[in-house]
Image 1 (cartoon, rainbow, N blue to C red):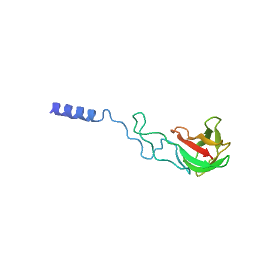
Image 2 (image 1 turned 90 degrees about the vertical axis):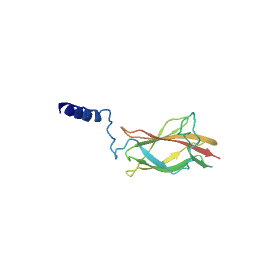
Image 3 (image 1 turned 30 degrees about the vertical axis):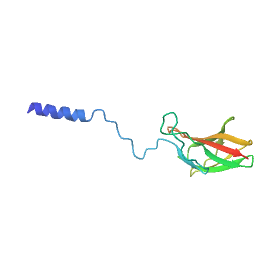
Image 4 (image 1 turned 45 degrees about the horizontal axis):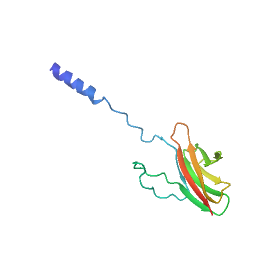
Length: 134
């Protein structure tokens, strides 16, 4: 009988070993958002990864600037827009998380930008943007 109790106790202790706690279902781990720019389908896998290339959001214009809108969650995130060669520009975010950004000083041809949203304790949301000025 004593042997049976010891085995049952050992089995109960081992059953809890190595388990990782489940993450909370409603816990936010990253900033998320949307843009009103065209998003191409994911490209084929690159360098053996299944994620493929990080395809940029795209737009085209005949003007020297282009405005676009989006939404970010959480709404308290800090949103920036940075040209490939230049300093980041802050983007105002409304209380509901909506924002409107303007890419300025577009040169003829392809112009590359990085739109980024950050919030303390969360993984950032980054989107490469390609704007072609014709």
